[in-house]
Length: 265
Image (cartoon, rainbow, N blue to C red; front, side, top):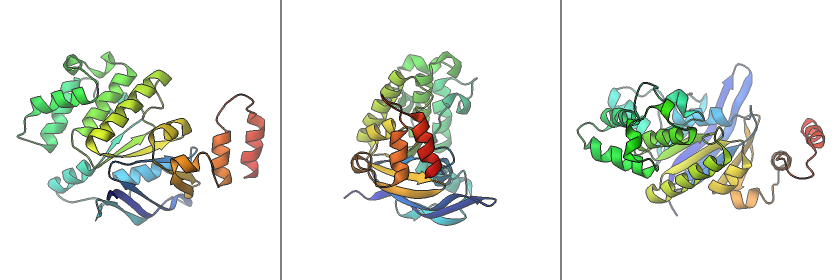
């Protein structure tokens, strides 16, 4: 059995009197793919931000390869080492890319920061090839790229530090359906090549069905159901999971009945 590259144990986080994350635990094995799903306000994004280190848990801990990730690590070397453990890809890469900086310079800047003294030329070419962008794209700036190409750049930048875990927060939600499929296929290939662990944060059960091995369903900050994706989605045990599945538009879909079921839950 592969070792767990990521473990969340008893995470709690509150905003005022609201429990955004309430005793959340899960594990992600090396090379695995785990999806955290739920509606807006379920706590899934706050959980992801705790894992990455953008939020601090009120209680509980996050472990990478068995070591506790300490919030607010002191010293530049420790902060960089911590950043290399877990990287995040956001929904809109345009907001996280400097519009004045070329693709190649984005990657070089990351490599200079984390791996000074290495062969950056070779690594930049490898990263561009790994995400399906040719070297010609290296001279382009974000505004000259399509949404799918920008997301490939964001993925390449995250992979540049060779993370153990890649957190993908609605990473394909803003893309056209055909481009979504291309990016998801790309991510599947990268996972097979590198054995990086994926933590998908999404409301899209279609994405979860395609690319995750395990699923965690959150509602009002708490985990209501979890297990293998191939078992949970065909046979959900919790009423909220069933409601999420029934909310997906399809022939015969009745939004009024769904709304009534949500109020009754």
